[in-house]
Length: 143
Image (cartoon, rainbow, N blue to C red; front, side):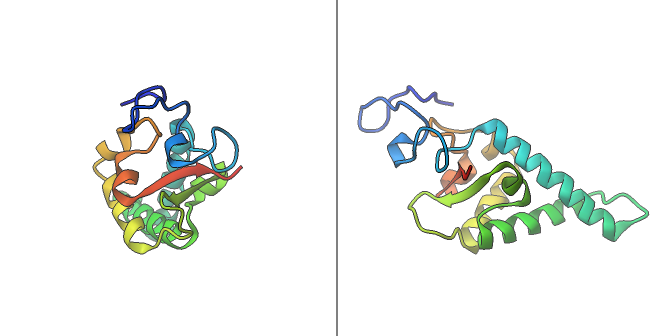
């Protein structure tokens, strides 16, 4: 994992996360912190467990909560750009190329790559995890 002060590809020092991609240092549009992103996914996991629990009552949802999380995440990111956890914490998934919508293929790839956990636990100097890099996305603050 790199820190914001590490050299970028063109030999210049990066002063903040996302600078080399044109993102602001802080405020709306800046790269979201790992802590904020972690809290957002925990909110999504809890919501998914609750939704799955509605269908499996009186039994616990077991692995059905993973399916609920997968569907909620893919649909929400593809069509709205954020999950319920992202919305609660003022985050949004954006394309690195600046286009407005993430769309289904990128949302699907991004979500599939979160399952093995390793891509979500390794990030670069911009705070982009491997699943975001593969999908060409980044998680930014909206407030």
